[in-house]
Image (tube, rainbow over all chains, first blue to last red; front, side, top):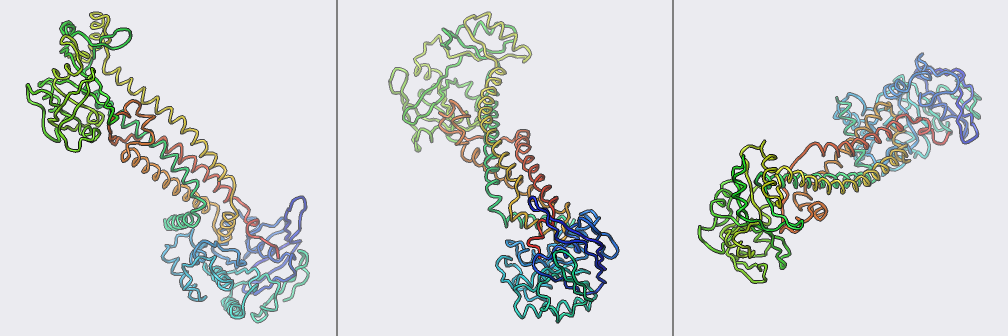
Length: 225
Length: 396
C-alpha cells in the first residue's frame, strides 16, 4: 500500500522556487491500478517519483507498506528501488551506447546473482517483448516502439511489487498500446500495484483503472475511485 | 563475489563504450609513464654497464699529470709502486682512443700482452669467432662483437687505421669476442702492446697509466696516499671513486630529464583534475539511470573505482611496455644523446635489461595514485548527486 500525507515538493530554479507538488494526501491500496492525470506541468511525474522514493518530499511523508520511505537513508531507498519497484521511464532514459541486454538487466548487476543467470532472465524477458533479436544491438539504434517495449521489460526484470510508469503511452503505435494494456491487466491480476502518470488517460481505459487522481498546479484536484 | 564480478564486467563494458572519452587521458598517462620508465630503465642499464666495466678495473689507477692534463707515465714508476706496503702488483698499460671518421665512431684501443690476454678471455670475455693472436704475431687484433658492424667490414678480416702521424696501418682481425658488458664489446679493439706502442708513437719507457692491485681492500686508501707521496706529479684514482663519479654523472643527467618530466606530470595532474571536476551530460545521464535502477552510493563508487583502476592499470602497463621496447629494443634512441653523453660515439650498444623495482614503484605512486584519487573524487561527486535532478527531466 502507498500512502502520502501532506506531501509537498519545491524545486529551486535560479532565484525562483517552483512548487511542483503541494500538500497531497492520498492512499493507494495494494493491487490497485492508479492513473495520475493532469495537464503538462501539473506535477504528475514529480508525484510519481515521490511515491517511487526517487525524490524526497520537502514536507509530508510517503509510506510504502507502512514504511516511511521519505525519511530513509538513500542506501536503503536504493535497495527498495532495486528489489520492490519497477519504473518505466520515458524513452530517453537508456544508456544509448550500451547493448539492449545490459540496459534491461541494470538493476540486477549489483547483486549476488551470477551474470549467466542475469543474462538468461534478460533473454526470457526480451523474448516475451519480441526483442530477442535485438539483444546485442545498441539501445540508440532501436526504434521508438522498441524502446518503449524495452522500457516496460526493464521495469519487470526484478519482478517488482509496485510498478510506476511515466507517460508510457506517448508515441506508442496501436500494437504496442494493446500489448501495454494486456501487460497492465496481467499485472493487476497478479496483485501488483500500478501507478501511471499520463496525460492521455483515455488510452488506458481498457486496462480498467481503479483510481484516477487529477492534479492541477501541483494540488490534488480530483480523486475518483 | 558475483556482485564484484558483475560490476567488473559492467565497468569493462562501460570503458569500451566510452573509449573516446577515456582515450586522451589514457594517451597522456601512457606518455608520462613511458618517459619516466624510459629514463629509469636506461639509467639502470647504464649503471649496470658501468659496474660491469669497473668490476674488471684495477683497484687503483695511477696517471701522470702535467698542466692539469694526463700525459704518458714513466714505466719505472711501476717498480717504485710495487715497493709500497700492501701493493700486490703494478702494471704499466698502453691504451687510448681512436676516432674513425669514415664510420663516425670512437674506438678504444688496448694493448694486451699474451699473459694478460689469456686471463681476460678466461673470465667475462669469450670468443664468438676466431681466437687470440699467437705470441709474437704482429698487427693482429681481436675486436668486440659490435665493432665489425660499426666499421661496415661486411666479413672482411683486414682493416686500416690512421696513426697519430697520419700514416696508414693495416691490421688483421684474429678474433671477435663477446662480453657481459656491451659497453666493452661495443668499441674495444685489442692488440699486442708492442704494436699499439708503435701505432701511438709512444716511447719504450712510457705507458698510458699504471694499474695497481692491492691485496687487502681495507688498505686501498692508505696505498693511494703512499703512491701519491712517492710520485707527487701523479694522480691516483680508486675504483670506488670512479664508480661514484659514474653514478653521479648518470644521476645528474637522469635528474635533468626527470626534472623536465615533472612538468609533464604536473600537466597530467591538471588534466586529470579538470576531468574529475566536471561530469559530462552523458555521464550524468548514465548515473541517473543507474541510480533509478536501484544502484546504491556504494555500487556507483565501486564501479568508478574499478573503471579508474582498469584505465590506470592498462595505461601504466602500456607505458611501461612501450618504455621496455624503446630502451631494450631501440637502445633508448630518444634519450641517447642526453643520457649517454660521450658514449653516443660508441659504434652501437645494446642496453642490458636491468629491473629495479623502487623507481618503478615511484612512477606507479606518482601516476596511478593521483588518477585513482581523481577517479574517487569524480565517483564521490557522481554517487552523491541528487537523483531527482537527473531523473525528473520535464515535469509532467
